[in-house]
Length: 392
Image (tube, rainbow, N blue to C red; front, side):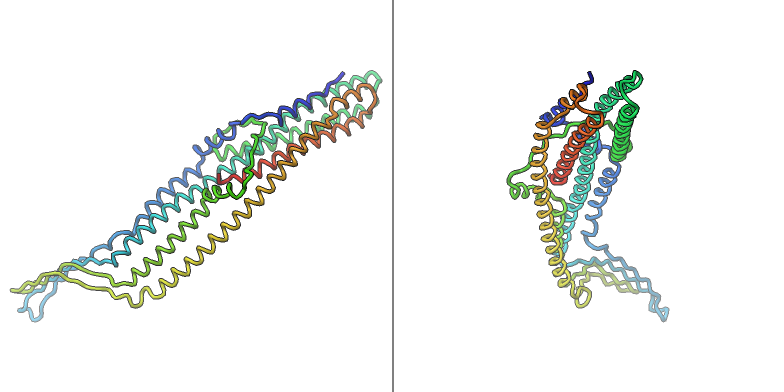
């Protein structure tokens, strides 16, 4: 008698386990270490931090030397030497330094945004792989059952106990099941290739076929506060607001007189003059409307930050609602699928002649489709939670 009871323990292993799989975290650690894009971003961040520290200091001093021939020749030669240093209004240097610090924080946040995006991408690929690994394990069992059935009907056909139609049905069912497994393996191979690419070209193995049990926060608004704090895009915009405000102050400071100070000497025949020189720059035209522009930019950035925060909140709220619904649907589907499982009864009914082979395949396919939907539902739930927790 052919057995088909393997489906029931399969469900228990896949959905009844409370184990926490460390496979995904290990893959993420490897990707963080080996990803070439992340390496390039780190180097770029280092360069940007250095670049943001430029232009903060005094302007270069000006050195001038004049060598003048006199006419008539009897008056001799005149030699002038001057060294000048220009200064902006003193507070300008403090504002520039503050802007530099804010920009360096932004550099870190830009890197963190890409970093978190890479982690989420890796988690999603691993999530897809868990689905295909679970399906691979299930399809292997289905192939064993289909092979056993095909062998049985081949023997029956050869002995005249079964007709050609049932023999062909059994062979086609085996063929289709094998092709399902081949198609699933193609998808698995493609996902592993994506992981290899993310891992700097180093191949990885990932055989997890059990989803980590996910917990959803009951108090969304309380959970959201932490998510907002961890969102590098929102934090970047807050830094941009601070930069814009500092620019307002800087432009006001640049509207105040600048200073020039230095040393000057004049040497002519029999005479020499030397001493200090002081001058002022009067900002009449160069910075016109600069403060107005800086204020307008601050308003723009504040509006962008408010809009981004609102969209982020609404997006996470929608994802949270979706995840709760999926979780409830999954729990209900899982419980009812186990409750109405007829796998063992179908096999007995076929063995005792209460079902034709066509009826058996129909009922079994119905169960398989339900099981596949359960896998897809669990994959979709985890996809949603991964996206929901991308900034956690």
